[in-house]
Length: 151
Length: 128
Image (cartoon, rainbow over all chains, first blue to last red):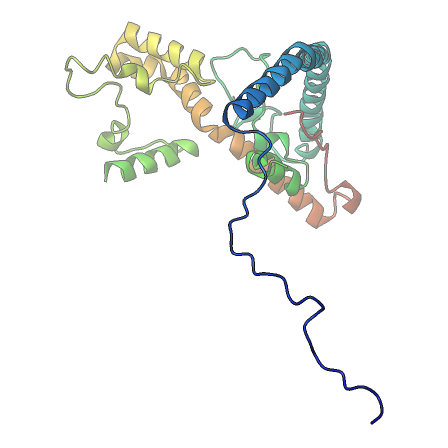
């Protein structure tokens, strides 16, 4: 064993002294300056938000509402047209299917009108079942439960 | 017991069967409460149909009853009463839909309708 024996000795100069005194974090601002700084910052941001950002949001909102109001009549008209077209299609389909049933008048039940005191030519809105008679059951089920489905 | 009787009466009316028992036929014709106190008129607005779709039917029926009274109004206002019941319960329209559906099924099974024609006009999703 010619090599020098390696021992686990302390480093040169010995170890440092153990620090047991308090070592708090460095404070940049204290007390009043901190509060003043916070208030200033908040003031500037509120000024910037209310005088620059919020008017843009309002402008966007106005535009959105305008677009809604402008397209609403068109959508309602489309919906009403589809509704009336379907009512007419229901009547025609009923006529076609019940042609073979004896004593069946289209739009009546047991020979009498549905609403006896109303005029013969008054339009009677169909109920949900009636609206979806000739459609698959799933469509009716989905419409009936649309309040719960809510995607 | 009274509710069961009323339900039976309503079901018979629904299918167009008149009640032959004299007493039972008078059972479901209650148009006003038995006791009149100072609070009956205050609570009358709670039990009206004026915010539903049947408001015009109800008004006409009630005006007719007021004009003719209860006993004579039974015969004179019968059509109006039937209309308001139809508006509430829609039993005629439901019976019609059932009949049409059954007829369609019967035609499919017997072969008068082809399999391509199982469904008729299908409505657009949000048009109702």
